[in-house]
Image 1 (spheres, rainbow, N blue to C red):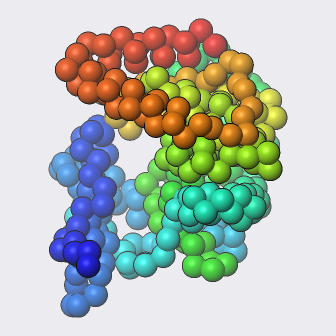
Image 2 (image 1 turned 180 degrees about the horizontal axis):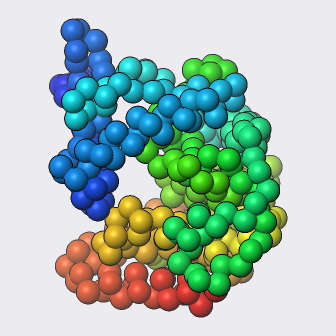
Length: 314
């Protein structure tokens, strides 16, 4: 019989962020019931907690009818949330992939994209977004379809599924300025590629072909072709969106931000993988990670190369 973790339980510890954004999220008990608490890890982060509460209030109106936002209550320097025992959308998709229920996994992802696209949008040049995350003074004046509110973290990891009710549980990274819809979808596809790589490879078949858009360190990351089309059949290149991701990570973490990987210039489609070959690659990747810990300078070299490749794609 598995042991039940004692409370309080730390579920997120964001100690690598800049001091003004450092928070910790725990599950604890209040009067015999579970609650989720988000607390500041540094005094400089206390205004950030108050900003989160303000963002939740604004997002609740914006999301109404498409998603069900979970809003907290600020008590002192802690935000308290109702504990919801539901599975995340990302984990639901992972379960379907693991059981080779490709159609169900795809249905959930397409439903996610449709709900995202049903939110209020505007056609505009996202000047504030580009100024904050692009880092390119010549970013251009191209009009893009944007979410009216910049919910950058509206991805499957932060959505709890309760039947037809989809609950948004993290509003930290939402902004008052518009953000391109395709970038939010890009973050969702990349999130799936990083977190669900083993399930995606195991489920690959002729009915679910996959393609290697991303690379992270020494590993290629595959995603279903149907999901990839949401971010490749657009006027914005994947390389540019990955630079936006790097800009966002630098906004949150400062100079401690490592590489976010790279985009593969000539992606290939596959319908099956050798389990033995994948196990061998995983073994090599583990060995490489150990080597990077022993030789930290090598980590910096690899990060520098990946960042340089991104710069060359400008």
